[in-house]
Amino acid sequence: MTRYGYAAMNTTLREESVRTNRGMREATFEERGLPYAGELAEKNCSDLRRIVEWNLDHDIYFYRITSDLLPWYSRYSLGDLPNAATVREELEAVGELATVNDVRLTFHPNHFVKLASPDESVVDNAVGDLENHGALMDAMGLSRTPYNAINVHIGAHYGDKEATGERFCGNLDRLSESVRSRLTVENDDKESLWSVPELVETVADEAGIPVTYDELHHQFTSRGLTRREAARLAADTWKTTPIIHYSESRRLYETDSTTRPQNHSDYVRGPILTYGTGADVMIEAKMKERAVLRYRERNDVNSKSDTPGDDARGT
Image 1 (cartoon, one colour):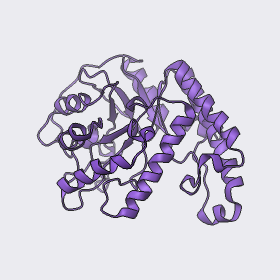
Image 2 (tube, rainbow, N blue to C red):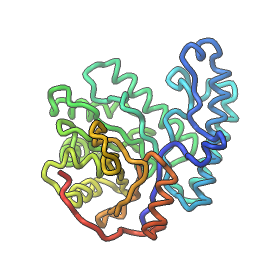
Image 3 (tube, rainbow, N blue to C red):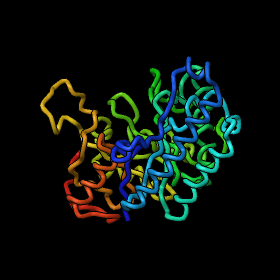
């Protein structure tokens, strides 16, 4: 049964100052150090629990956690925080909620995480960032499977796609089991970058990493495949319930010709299809949980399977 989720901010709770991305400038971190970082981390993790509880109250069982949960996390380990025990307690509480209620929690590290970069320092930073995500998932007690995905993009081709793909797969050996077991890779939104069939051939077939199908992105990298064909091709790389990302272009809703067609709309009309894959759907819309609730209400779906609709080519 399809679950519809959203990412990071809960706009309803944000009005009550509930958020999970409290941070600080580098100068503040240098001045106030780990005690202040720990204070912010504790508040973020406590509010993460509140968001998951709110989601449960509204029958939302799929949620993407912000990668900004721990401020300046690249500069320390979780155990270095003065209040590490309390932060861990909050993370464990989130994980227990997820486990008991079968809530799917995932991460999507930002575009600076470039595991295929030819620059060794960039790869070092990417590995460190990914390991931090894995450590947070382990602290929550989440499964070491793509069910609790850490989803990334290859992010570039560096003038030689074949060599870039080989670097990406080669650098997987630098990742711990905590990360590699959860890693997934997503198709891009630029014609020159990575499509679903390229990721399947280069990453899934070679290294066993599942491919996350993004429907809007596919329109820019279709390689002649229909949406159904691409979604099913990606889904076949999963050994657990696949994930589909669904968003709609803001251009569908406004007349500003300067708006990039890749920009996400506030809400989505659908219909959202999973093409018989049984995938969970991450709705990437600016209005977050409100977009999920409106879509479910208007389409009379709540953890149901596909709504019938067109299988147009993603061109």
